[in-house]
Length: 61
Image (cartoon, rainbow, N blue to C red):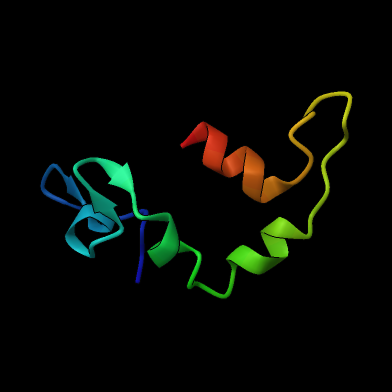
């Protein structure tokens, strides 16, 4: 599944059920195998006090 592509003006993530009412379905997203490495990837606390890439990504989204 590709989250980055869009069909018309509707992103694939909406079409594939990863967003409901324009809110991320975190449980569905966390099922992907690329999420776990993000949780284990620390960030420099000087610039990213949230601690890891996954937390940062969730905050951005």
